[in-house]
Amino acid sequence: MACFAEARVYLEAAIARKPSGDHEIPYNLGALAYALGDLPAAEHWFAEAAASAPTEEARSKALVQMAYPVLAGGDYQRGLALYEHRFAEIASTQVWELGIPEWRGEDLGAKHILVHGD
Image 1: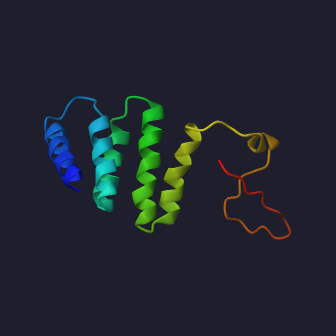
Image 2: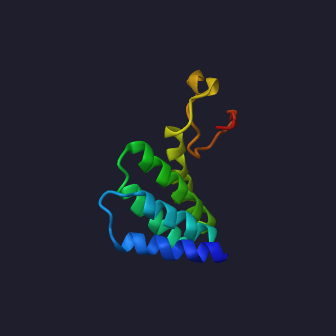
């Protein structure tokens, strides 16, 4: 924990200088806050990282990380929606190529559901 406290001091000093377009500092502050169990701060910093991300890939990465504190806080609907940004980071699998529509919570009735890892 001492290392986390020291890291927080340096990261907060860096963010106070407001480096233009640097999304890595808020991203690291989000990771640090999450490791310390400060879920609201983690969400805040990951949102800042997403807002200042220089690429769509970096934005998606920050939003996926933001999903963790949101999910840990119990907001599953919003957390899972954020977590879906991981699709930008992973390759499609053969299962995705079958043309099977994604389940969106509707009644399955007599239908089947295929569950697979992403």
